[in-house]
Image (tube, rainbow, N blue to C red; front, side, top):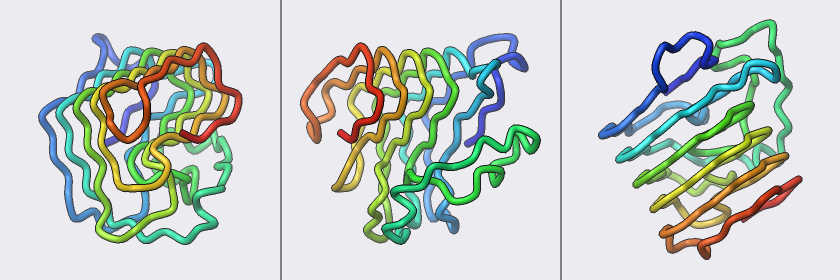
Length: 161
């Protein structure tokens, strides 16, 4: 699953009723815009994503480079610090009824969210460990997930939930 900057869409992108399993890569799904051109108004619902998992601990702490000259190639960031979704430079992202699963234990959070304004998660499920890693995120909300308490954050500079 890959999104490019919203300047290429005529209507807000929506992904729903999707299933992906037996991924052969450690690469998560990527939603990434550019600093001056964020991806906007993304809605993802009713999705099951099964990843291979098994990443080394060091991958959970990576800070991927921007590599804007290689945009929008999925390997432009190199290894990524998420096992489910890597979201960078976005506005108004909504996830509803989304499950991330891994075939092998993985130390990375299911969702790595960077430089995002407006991230709403309802009824998301993921393997044990951290569900979210937030970096420079504004207007974040999670509810009905069971793994973490319902919460709203006006801003999160750097936080793991």
